[in-house]
Image (cartoon, rainbow, N blue to C red; front, side, top):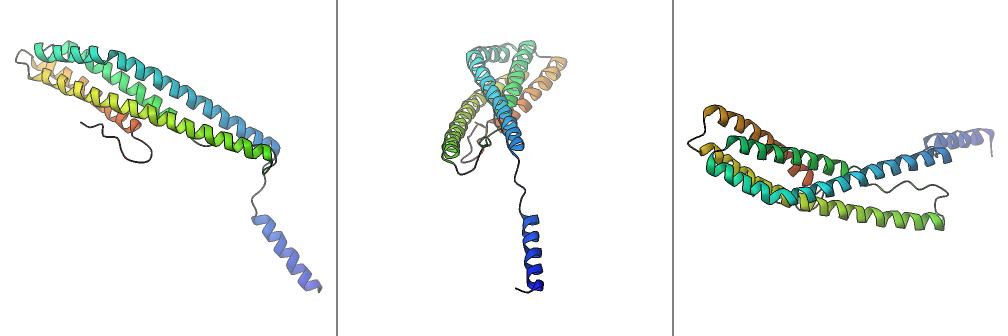
Length: 205
């Protein structure tokens, strides 16, 4: 092989080496795994928070319905505002928890020599865990979507309070502002409860 051809091949190999992605060190891979695990722990905590808030809302749902009906029947703007504030706060908290619960869907990083039997088994386990976590989040979103539908019905009943003839202008204005805040919070909850893929859940009726 001539010196010119040898120099050409060496230059080509050097160029290929430069273009190839740099392999991470063991320390970098370990750091990636730690960060991924921390993110997964935060996501798990958010899902548990969402579960608690869903359970709390389910327990309060009937009381909210009764209170909204009473406010509409009697023109009690103060009661209507209280119900609206409860719905607003619950919708905001649950929507935030759902958004945080969807923050980590990737499979955790794998350390060690790629292609080994241990890594293959670990990857399979992690894929199963990711699938289970995805199903868990979908179930939470489904429950939240159903709750949002019920809360929308309560909001419509609260709006009837403004029709009561005994309600003065000041009370009606204050109530409208609070109800509007609750409706915007519910819209945020609806967005958080919408599935990431597949058919959309109808939470508008």
